[in-house]
Amino acid sequence: MKKIQKTAAAIFIGIVMLFSMSAVVSASAAGTISIKVGEDILDIAPILIHNDRTFAPYDVLFDALDVSAECDAQTGTITATRDNTTIILTMDSNKIGATIAGVTQWIYSDTTPIYEQENDRIYVPIRFTAQALGYVVGWDGATQTVELKTLDALIDESGVTYTAMDRVLGYAREASSVCHAVDGSFNATIDTAAAALYGSTSDITIPLTISGTASGLIDSFGNDMSLHFQTNLSDLVSQMQTIMGEELDEETAAIIEQLDDVDISLISSSENGMLYIQSPLLEALADVPEDAWVSIDAGDVSLYSGLDQQFTDVLNTDTQSDTQGDFRQYVKMVLQSELLWDYGGETMDVLSEINAVFSDQAMTRDGDDYIITINQSFDQDWYEQTSSLEVHLLFDGEDFSGITIDLLDSETYSYTEESSSESSTALSFSFMTDGQADLTVTATLDGEALINLNCAMTYTQTDEQPARAPVEGSTIISIEDISID
Image (cartoon, rainbow, N blue to C red; front, top):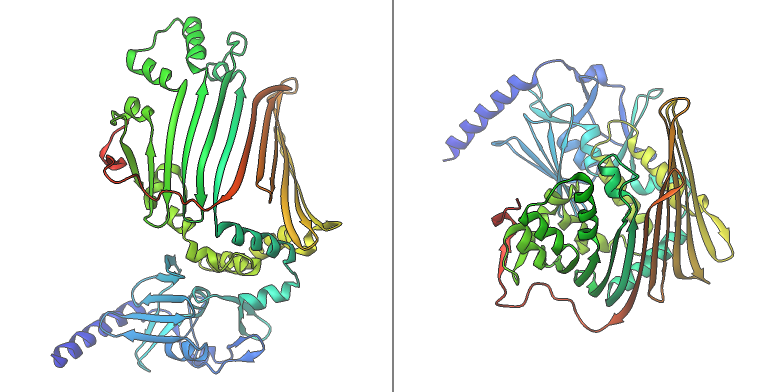
C-alpha cells in the first residue's frame, strides 16, 4: 500500500512540475528581497519571483508567521490555520479557499503555488496567502521589502478611535439579547404612479393609497409577525380600465381585489435557517391552500431578493457576537473580507472610507451627542445630483439614548436647454431607546409630491418568545414546489 502511495505521489509531483516550471527566476535573483511584520524582519529564504509576484516556501513562511500548516503530497493541497481562519491552496489551481469564523469564500488569485524541482520545495504567493490569513500586504521598493501588517496595526496607524460607535453597539448587543413585542402602523400615498406608468399624468386622478398595521415578536434569532394592509388598488385599476378602454381577465381581477385587503403572517428563524409565509393572497397567486405556509430556505433568500450575501450569513449571531459592543472588531471583519479581493491598496482605501464617517475624529460634538455629516455632489452635462446626510447619535451622559437620520437627495435631468426635470427624496428616521421608532419618506417630481410614507413602531421588552416555525400539524409547502404564473 505504501509503495502505491509513493508511486501516486511521484506521478502527482511530476504532473505539477509540468505546470510550474515556466518563468521562474532563481532564488539568487531575488535574494535582496526581505519580508517583515511590523518592524521585525522575518527569517524567510529563499524568495522566488514569478510573473512579477513574490513567492516563499510555504513551510518557512507559515512557521515565521506562527501558522500551523500541512501539505498533502498526493492531492497537492496545503492547509494552513491561524486563529479563526483556515486557508486551502492547491498546486494546480489559482483558487484559495478561506474559511473565516465558519464562513467559506473562494479567492481567485492571478497565480498558483509553484513546485521547484531543484530544492524539492513548494512555494506560495506571499500577497494572496498573507491576505487570506488577515495581513495587509505592502511593498517598499526602496528597500525591496514586503511589508505585512496586522489589521490592528493598520487601524492603530490611522490614529482613530470609535468611542461613540462602541456605545451604540453596546446598546445593540444588550437590546438584541432580549425579546421585544412590536406594534406599529404605516400609511403611504403614491400620486400619479399609475399615470406615469402609461406615459400620462393628466388623466389619472386617483392616488394609490396603502395603510396597514404590523405586530408581533422579534429577537436576535428571528421574528414572528402579523401584517395587515389595505389599498385602493381596485378603484385605481378601474379608472385605468375606463381610460384605456381595456378589461381585466377574471384571474387578474381576483388578484387585484385581494390586494385591497391583505393579511400576511411571517416567521423567520436563524436557528433552523427558514422563512415561512402565510397569506390568502398566495392562494390567488399560486394556488396555495388558504391556511398553508410557504417555506423558503434562508440560504435561498438571495435567489428571490437579489442579495449578494446569503441570508444565513447575515443572521448568524455567532458571527455578529464578536462585533457587538466593539466597533473596532466590526471594522476588522469588514477589512478582512476586503483583503480577500485586494490586489494592492484597496483595503487601506476602505479603512479610510470607514474612518471618514464612523471614527470619533470624523464626527462633530454637540454636548454629549455626536453628529455625522456627509455631503456629496455629482455633475455632468445632462445630469446633476446632490445629497446631504446627517446622523445624530444621541447620548445621556455615557449612555446611548437614540439616533436620528435625515437624508435629502436631489437630481436634475437636462434633456435640452429648455427642457429639464427635477426630483428629490427626503427621509427622516428616528429611534429612541424608550422603544419608539418613526420613519417619514417624501419624494417629489418637479415640485409635485409623488410618494409620502409614514411609519411608527413601538418596541416593548417582553418575556414571550417568537415562534421558530408554524405550529405542529400545519401544512407547509416549499417555494420550490409551487409556481407563480
